[in-house]
Image (cartoon, rainbow, N blue to C red; front, side, top):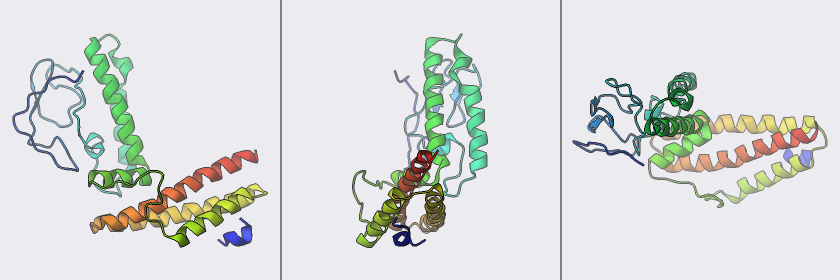
Length: 227
């Protein structure tokens, strides 16, 4: 699109052997016991004790991929993710524990909130990619250009100007459609970079995605003005 033309209380655990990785903390080497009956928790993460059925507290450092039972990949199965989310929320919802002990009520609230956060982070490509970089020890700083080149920033300025000056919803829709296409292309590029282990390249692409995602939100705001 020619934008110029548009003018645009943690409970005590019993550890027998500790091991952690950036991607999946609480791996099979870590042994945990139920806070209530001390039964060994075989599954990790363990939301419930198989012996006494008590809800368990979240284990600090467990990756969102482990929580949502997803493969550690950028192109994860979002339908499976949603199915897992609904199943977990049905079983962990605080309303289910209103007659339980205060401790179980607190644990259910913590687990439910954690599942919400994990789901929200992994559902969208941008937040998923940023989280994967975070697990690898890389962060994109807020409030900086993060190495974006001047030509790219100039292009963004033109898009923003075109959106600000849009006089009809059709113009904003055209811009939104173009941005959606750019985000789809960048998503494919990020997947390729992550598969090759090219973290710096993935980071640069995610920086661009952040800018385009911001414009996508502005398009929605602009369209609401025409209603």
